[in-house]
Image 1 (cartoon, one colour):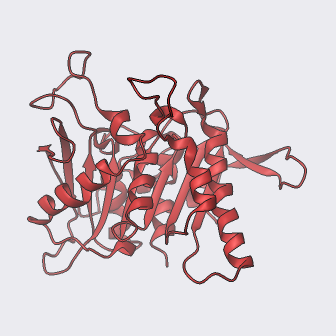
Image 2: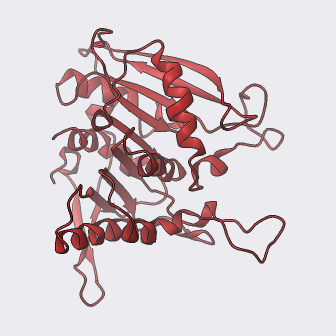
Image 3: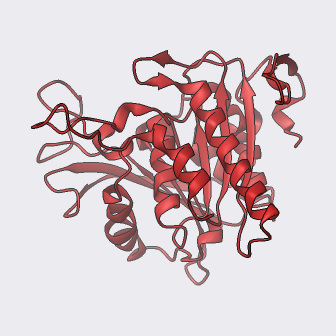
Length: 321
């Protein structure tokens, strides 16, 4: 796969274990490209919000969300949908992602169809979302993003999307929907699609936290069984039924390695598991879908910058077929 943003990049390889192929690690300049910047000759959409949303499924929380409406949006035509976690990061005009700019430029050049963007913060346990998050207003990020329950997905699919859908004509075709995020937001996006592929079949996963952040022993029985965390996904993928998912992964060889896990290893395990399950399905001549994945390994740290530079081409790839 050729990425326009990779023209100036080089690659080196890591030594492989016996029986494994060499791993290519991209290095170089991952600066934000023109597709992620405001272009003066391109019709600009509008970023509406932030709005507050109170969920009944995830009770006693409030979250903020923004809605991006492209200039080409026609209420008579159902628009594509892109959902991105950590909405304040996704829409930061000085950040690495700048998703609203990417959508604007890709719609204008015809790479993707008109797309509504919804950018959502994690919940907050307070009556109104605070302007400054502090210890007195704990953020609900890991209990929503890093666990393998369906609460967040149900909040999104059953509550928030119908709410936004009252104002905008958004497709219900899962092939025309993409959900993405970085770090814990990435595993959250994967969990939504994994559990509800009839709602989302495309995932963008940057520096995904497929580690044990969400795994906790029962509070009243520390010696009891641990709850599931992201480190369980490779086993679930290898042994479970194949979902009709298309996933773009990016991670860096200098990502985090701590008590929760090794991020770079965890992302490699995800890719290996998806390809293993496809191989077994082919060997058994199983009917049904196959996972479609692309991955780019860089020398990056736990940062949005490398993934952000690839976002335009990741979206082109996702909606290229």
